[in-house]
Amino acid sequence: MTQYFLTMPHDTADEPTMESMQEMDPAELEAMIAAVDGFNTALNESGSFVTAGGLQPPSTAITVDATGDEVKRVAAPFVDATEYVGGFWIIDVADEETALGWAERASAALQSRIEVRALQEAPE
Image (cartoon, rainbow, N blue to C red):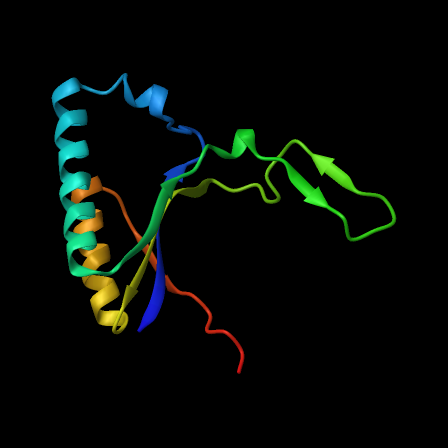
């Protein structure tokens, strides 16, 4: 089995948060939450779920650099980008095709693009 990282991109200009989601149409928000709950339930029931989470927007990031003589903490993301990872799942499935199938279901539930990447295997 291979673990895959499914990520959901967000537009940096929007920086959606749980608070800003309250501004959505209540019926649309309820439908999206139900769709994601259904996706998560199916993922759990299949035995493929490892973990998942939502991330705070990049404006909340602190980048730590301890590679020099002095530790630096910068209140900013390590890279400027027009999009960022807003949420993720780590799944454990037999192959890439299965991971892509789960990504299709996540994309439909969230009405968002989903990126799929395999986690690196541990060295032998």
